[in-house]
Length: 294
Length: 294
Image (cartoon, each protein chain N blue to C red):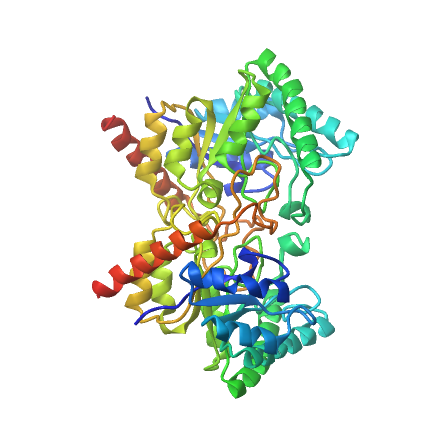
């Protein structure tokens, strides 16, 4: 059992266009088995060309959904809610066209800081309305996914990025309410580090519901450069039988002084392939130890 | 050498008014040595009455400054910048009136998520302008602090709460640029957990510049209920000779389902004095081991 290790496209560029397909061999050379692509917006990538380039480089692909306030299952605006469902259905079609089987992300919508929306109190009826809407929307989208052999991973984000699902328990509660074979959770150690009392315990709790996993350092630096306990994470993943993909998303850039918006996506200052390869090695090594100790 | 342990006023109530002074004996009973008060806005608390109540209960006091976009050293708006300086001077006067010697917080201004301000790219000249303004404003306010025997602790916040100072290194860079005996850093493990590669190493790096410390669990739950390595934090604090106050700020409330705005301050659902006492015990125990092992 060997988990495929991948790298998110925006490690290199955002938006990721046809001109960036030339980067695929660098991903492979760094030890990656797949790329996690942000679901392309219309016109960003030709799906046929992209699929051929992935295959030519021996790389798999996982998709990361992008929500906003205009396509938002949790929105009180019916048009935004419906656009949220339509977007998830588009993601399924894009996955089928690219040969991907996993679509992950904050599928429930309701972005906070990145949408300029401050956290505000919510009444219990309003909270319940939002969750009911999210579950209803996911059920609808899940039917399309089931038909295409695609699975959705609901990703909890930290408290500053959404007010819908922050903890692994929140993600599991949504997945259980949707109750579809095409819906599970996607876990990201960057968010878990902020919201779960124990990352290994959360992985054990999620168990077979884990569809996808993102291995990120506590400060979004390179895996192995911060304080996440990678051997313990690997042991938990192997213990619950997780054999799926693991994506790295090191967005931190080095040498940034005070006044730099660290939360904002920023392009790399320089070629970081060497650090990426070291991160892949750290993670693969931790997984090997975990497998050996099983 | 024994660090005083304190509790933030908004653990119980926000705003914290005269009617809440009756809570002070509960703080003492939970093992606290001081209260960290949000700097009262005009009319929130009578300073003389509050000082007498603190003294009657044998509690010290530390002040937490509250900035916003209208009082913001980093603002391009000159009125907001000047209001930021005036506010810090008011904080010094409030400290003197209450018998406090420490004012901590994100003194540089520039709130993000709580102000509904999304992270956005910044040009290098604009970044430098902001930092120059912050340093200039802090220098002015520091003169008032020096005259009153009060010290400022610049608190780095995580990337979602500000784009001025996120890491311990950012806080130190600002403090070193201000270069006043009345200005150091205030470190909070909640933010450090997200931004510093290693919390103990960051404490070692800050060393004698540490004015104030906040011990918070990774998810803002009770100290001892999450994954922060308290024995290692305590060893680092003792190793650098930090003998100052340590505040707890457990804002997490239990039993919250999906759709709850965890980032939003929320009142306690129930009396949590028992958990607070257990947190104080965890921290005091870790500090005792660290002192014994010195």
